[in-house]
Length: 208
Image (cartoon, rainbow, N blue to C red; front, side, top):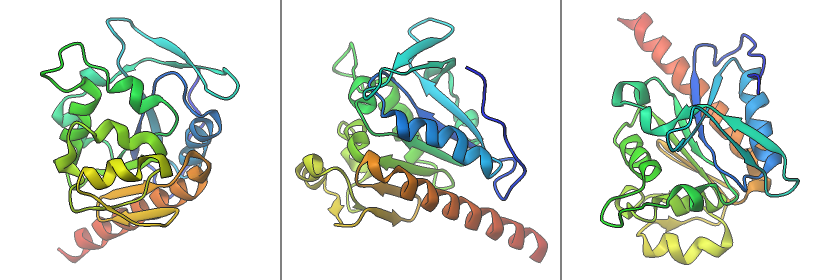
């Protein structure tokens, strides 16, 4: 699959990572692919490749194919810092990615998310059932304001997070949204958040 055409925009030079697996919500994923590129951002889709060079996944609604060639296990700490945001999408992506062969160790995607939460300069975006991926590392959302799918409200409260009944919630470097149907609002909030951060960095550099 060819990359979306990236235009010059307020997010030119910015990279956004989106986690992927089968049973993704097609309207959301294809929207991210093009919408962020409209603002100038490069979008990388990451998955667990299981030793393959690429994998093709199928969507939940229409069984649409989507090929991913970026391995999440290959993302170093320096590589992670090259991203402005890491998105855990809706659908069954998080549930599939939280599988681990060794139950004494977190899944690679969960470990990547844990490392992302250690980087305050990196925005963490979690939408709908994406919060499943954080279930094994509840400390990263403990005390944070979040929203999630109605089915996961008990889960996030058990994780120590503060559930907020809004479609989109911003808590510092954490952005959450209620369902996959809210992906356009989620994307708008992320674009605004990243644009503001870019503007602030530019202003700080000029003030030095």
